[in-house]
Length: 476
Image 1: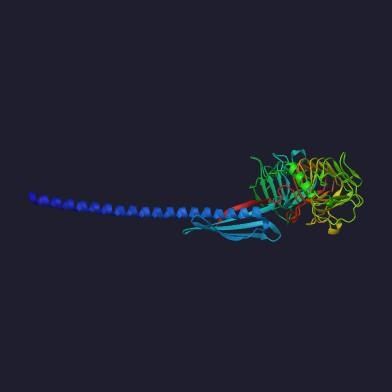
Image 2: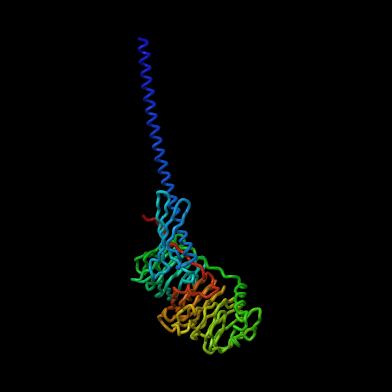
């Protein structure tokens, strides 16, 4: 009996051991299966994340091309290799009438994973917009916005609050406010127009509303006065481009006028080999009469046949014609015109760099022979670290893009200030502040979308493009 019991116990132990080994084996295979599944999922997640980053790299490459090559960028379809992945990128302009509006698609592939990103982009030259880039909440008169009945047509970027009063309208778009609020001071002003919606990008100061009425009540897209196709709070931070040191502009102007033979006879009565006729070392007054400086130069020439060559500069007092090619440096204040109703036509593609303030007292535009339109032959640039004062009484109570009172590419580190009614401007103004006096009514600013392709030399940021993303999303 004892031997039988021992044998029986040994048999039971054997079955128990075998059972335990089977359980352990099943568990081991289960653990291995779970581990393999985890490894597979982890690898897939890693590949998916890698594919996402590869797609992002493709987007960044396309944005870099837009910023450096502008809206004529090529190629528009390309592949780039990033680590173990490849991004297939395509960039298209969505609307032939809006060369600055782009959509970029980038599909990143890594292993078995694919991720597809789509970004919409506004790509502007600085000189394709009118800008008030003052700091803080200052934009215009009173440090609080656009006052008077002043309208903007075309891309417009401001830093700070904007107040629209009278029949002021922001049309064309897109419209950007950085750290500010848009406020309607009455019921006649509007953002966009009914049937003509614009894109709006408004990033208010913390705790403030995007758009409000005169009582401070918030307004939304679709409400009266707010005619927008989209409203976003993502606004790029655009800074005022810095001016070069004044000595650089002076050297440029001097080098362009190194050959006395290129100057017109009698334009400058005293000209030195050091400075040349395109460097003026005192206040200059370009008006309908003789132009004299306090000290060195006298511009008092009757020139009827110009045949401009690169680097020339002249003033025809009888015909009120200003000829500028290249860069001219003026160490002092500059006055153009003698009263708000006078007219001066500018010829050539050139820039006046002024170490002082600029006073525009009269119509200033290309010759009527080209219908007052800026073109590659007739563009005037004005640069100052101070203020440009505009005192031009427009003759048209409804200012038109086709017949502006002044036009060109103006840069003022401090401000551009309008002092008269019915003034129309075509071109681009980049300033710390766009200042419309409270008693100024019915002024209009129109952008010229072709201006970036025909800019005169020396303008700050003339080669800079702003690739501003409007939306960034993943698509199937």
